[in-house]
Image (cartoon, rainbow, N blue to C red):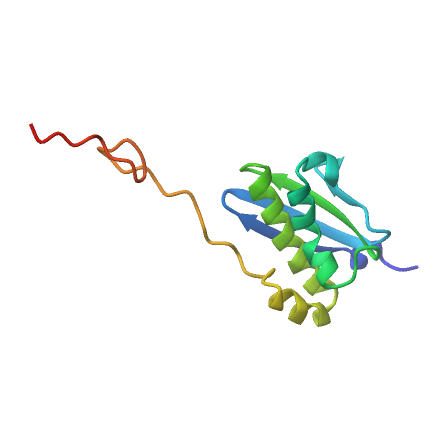
Length: 133
């Protein structure tokens, strides 16, 4: 009998303040996010395209099942975190997947974050109106 834990590949993806814990197993291509189907969880079609990019780049859309636990941030950040976590998990599944994923830029963490608000000002960049007199 094959150990079922040995057939699970886990990875973590991050984007903005979102974290996605991804587990892939051999299967039919089902993607489950926080207990829901991915297309229902991410209502926007752009997010659905974004999360499937690693599967398309490695031609494994119908070969693995994906279970994801997303926390923090909004839907857009969670989709970006899921994309990175899925790409990392596919690299663990098969090291030959790394070159196409790296070429597509799916293994690079997006460093853009919300800039902090500065003291004495109304926002990160916005300033109070200047009055000369």
